[in-house]
Image 1 (cartoon, rainbow, N blue to C red):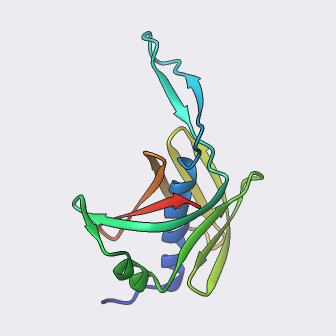
Image 2: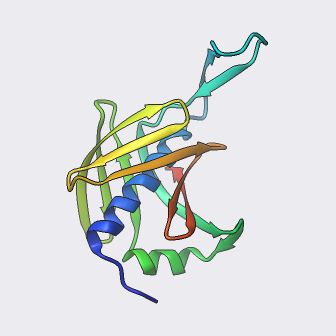
Image 3: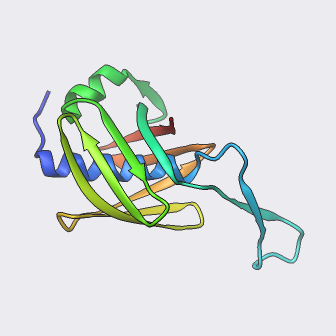
Length: 139
C-alpha cells in the first residue's frame, strides 16, 4: 500500500468527517425551498457532533474499513462544534479547523490551509479521496 503525506491525510479526514456531521441529525429541520413553485422542501441537518469513518467505496463497491484505516494511518474522526470550530483526529495526530455548511455541502478549512468538501447523503457524510468515497457516521 502506498504511503501518503500525514498532512494530506489529516485534511482528507477532516473533509470526510465534515460530511458525516452534515447529515447526522436524527430529527432534521425542514426549510421550504425558495427555488421551486412546487411545495418541495429541502432538509438541513445539524452537523454538530463527533463523526467517525465507518466505510468506503470505489465505483459503488464497498472497500474493507481496515484497508482504508491502514492507508490513513489509523482511526479517523471529526468533531464539529456549534461555534464553527472543528477538530480532526487521524491516528495519533489531531488538527484544528473551522467549518461551514451550505445546504448539503460542508466545507472544512484546515489550520494548515487546506480546504475539504463533504456532502451529506442519507444521514452520512461522504468525501472523495484518491478515487474513493469515504463514509462517515455520527457517533
